[in-house]
Length: 193
Image: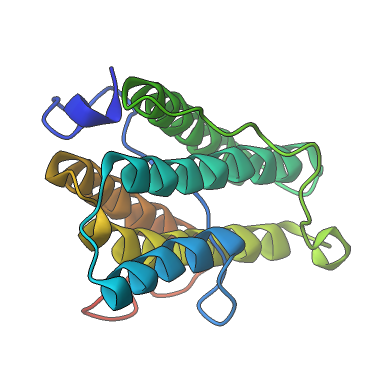
């Protein structure tokens, strides 16, 4: 299944889950790239093309691959106890599903999917306990919500926008679940920004 028909597919078992970004104060490179792409297109007035859509999808794929690595870091840290460890592994599985769908869609559109980086820059020196790991994951999920919110309107192919919006919803769910695990109000406001 590719992202093009993913939007209209029935909800896959365990599917449609999040990719990572950064906190509300500091957006990840992924969020910045997605938002910058939106701003550049708005300034030039150019219509999106398949190549633009592939670029957005590759940015999302890069974020999914980063998310897989981030959740692996959390799982391997020894800092997460059940049920938080199970949650991290489950969310990582969602990111793997998204990465697979994104890569197939990029290929279907004639593009070349990006590869995972050999090494990611995670704030490992600040991750001292389970709360730190969960807070880091929650901040990444919040950034991903912002990134997808910025990306949805710039897709030239509206089916891609629809599918991205479904992932945005999952990003928001991940963020809410992680906030709840931290003892915070799961949904802090009526609007996502």
